Length: 261
Length: 339
Image (tube, rainbow over all chains, first blue to last red):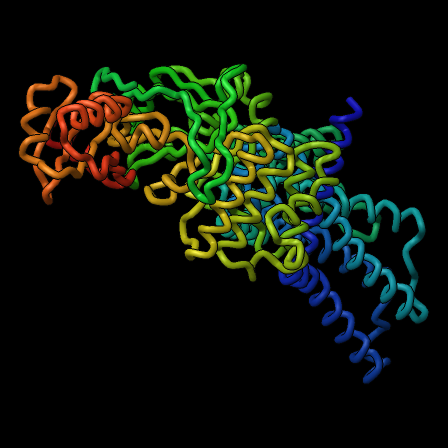
């Protein structure tokens, strides 16, 4: 048992090493998350500085809510998809999967080691973005209201959930397809284009409860978030999110075990 | 000792010949315990096409074993079956005495293998790639990284990104990765591919050291006949998915009996003396001497005694040594003609 835990820890560490040391990739992921935040915050700071009467302070609760949207709905999930795709198909792309299989280690263990490593990288990147957003929220609040500690903690947990779920799904899809570009294209297309469109399609009725974006928006914390596009019970929301997290990674695990190495 | 069955030349596995690379001490092959690899009737079909057909191999422990064949002959498919990467259509295999794929994980824990060319994460250094491999191998393996890097002569480049390595360096790093778990058996698929002459020499020496000094078994697939002849003790030749010959290299190249060249003062008379001898075949006069094929190499002494006792002055009596390449082409051509 101790040996298995040691091996599991080593394998997660190895996956973390291969992700974190891919410097160009890490720079891209950070840029995807940080660039919109920095540009948007900088624009608002300049606006406010140039005409304080017409434009309010850049920080405060409104900035915080917008920042949550960017990190939890738009750029954060894009980064999570990039990281998940790399974690899920990186060893296949480099041709190292076969060598890992040749060690006799279970393929399921090889698959499972990808998840904590990718989540660690995703959470780190999102945490950097969140820290920057908080700094702007409080640093440029002026006389505006700021979020409470409990809202900040709830928001951090929601960001972890939203991005973690997308990252795990991306690992599953990448392991299933074996293709990073295919996974990135399909999931970003779904996340940024198709899913928001379906979410707005009221003709779909309660079928929209099955959309992950709808669930995540429904679970988004704070009264300042506004009304969610769709409503459902918390139990249904959790069940739908769990289904997404279970099915696609399970398919990825199955393909990892059956794939011709 | 040479017998034929179903078109396969089976040559005895008793090996006591010297290291042909550097003329070092004779290698006595350990015969105790299960063979390093054994297959019985191993077959793999892709649809109606047979990639490997009824292959029965025995790889003795403590040897460098060459698995020879043209590109597409079925070498890599057989290796993939041995390593449990693909299932056999029929037949059985054991690796280090353990049946595969049934006990694949236990067997592979004692095996280091490179299938096709070794792959690495190009953005990681050589040392980091070995760290990743060691993590999958198990606890304690990481402590061997420095040792194996030194073993393959890469300690000075260990902290450079693998993307900057030459093919030869990647091959050596691949061997280092194989050695991480201190394996009893190494399976190297075309390890000489793409190497320059210096790289081939390094690889050959490394393989000989692994066998002679460390007692490991090294199974090498290759289409480079000359390299296998220089590196290996035992070989099997595969053609069209079937093993057509296997045995010690020396016996393989001599064809089990051997050709003999005799130089003497009267070739015509010597030919007359040996003409009716049942041990002598294909006797002919060539360049003023005699050339013949014997049933067994040991009969050379008897031939010498007969000629000398009949008053023929023998100035030279030498077995003809073919290259493995010549034997390989001879065997594969013979099969093509028979077909």
